[in-house]
Length: 573
Image 1 (tube, rainbow, N blue to C red):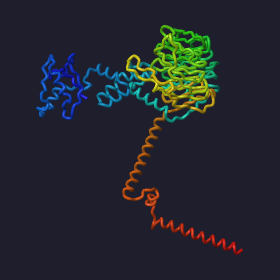
Image 2: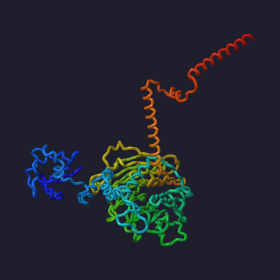
Image 3: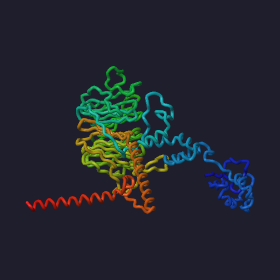
Image 4: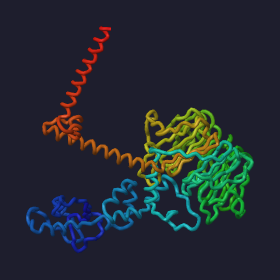
């Protein structure tokens, strides 16, 4: 595609790169094989317009001067490549494309491939889906990624991993807790799993090996909530305080939770709640905690002080922050609060029949999911909610027969755990559609509620209550009443699918080869059944078919003689 930026009716070969003014005609002409512009004749209609440059010669007879056609076309087209545009304009054009469009553009040429690979739009696409990746200990290069890879590489790898949850998997079981496991947390960036429960001990596991790395001393209470990133680990339970560990520099597993032989400054507690801590969450600057004292508290990570408190009408059972807002569930209702002002922005009354036990949010927009005592999972769009009208669920799933105790979201998958011993996996790609607006790129798609697809996968066979679930990278982790931690490992799903697809292709190729051979034999007038082919490949001396027939005839005659002799002997006796 060649872009012509020519003066309407005028052209100046001396100023091929002049900036187009108001009267400039911009055309995209597809050049023919010989270099002529297909729409060149259409310029004749504009040859009466004035220009500040030399006038364009009028084309009264387009067929003459064919010998100099190439030079005339080159001088009149003024072709320019897309990469000749100013760098700022190229970035604006690329910013209008989605990830699929950027991938197509990168295949056009090596220059465009380099431009697309360095485009900052990949960072926006990544953060819209999965948020900012966990930062490592130590200084981070401004504008860079935690591990030094490009944003495009991070996006492609994460998108590739998200497809593995529909493939084959293996199940690993971690044993170590003596009582039921009430909470699990997966820190995929560090290959760590944290668990806690009624035995009052926090345990840290290696995600890849499935081995116990470290465990805390008993705290004398039920551990009900765990949250972590690459710099801080926090836990909460029925003793009403928040136990915290800072990451230890130089430690390959980040935290030393046993507390023996380490710096005491890396372990501390936050006091303020007057009841059991039921839920925790982290972001780069804050700690969020909810409690049975009917409050949600916001803590500043720099000062380690409570900076905000939100009062509820019932026990706080779950919370989920997003940007400058935080969603929480208390009793049957779900609340959305503004963190800076402390105001209540939205209330979802009677979100479930019974208590709303769990809540999850996406990084895409103001969409939240709730799970309740009625076994239902509901999706609410709170982006355009008003105080005058009740917020109705945009979608509802009922995959469980018992209360939904836990929800976790990683684009595009929503996973739930229930007391019926099952885990549901729901794909939300069809419910969330991108917008062209740069301020709000995603919204909930308008669709028929009766046409909602059921969960893509259901994991059965545990026979006990499941209290907590988490998802990350290519793993799903859950803990339950039996005291074990189960891990669904999808890391080899795509590789297995590739091998299966290659095997299917090989089988299809063999079938086509046999079909071709059969058609060739039919064309030669020979019977192409399997028996004739086998006889042809396994011939012995003589006509084997005649031998078989003679042998069967002889055996039949000999058997009849034996039968007659036997009857004669019996008659004589």
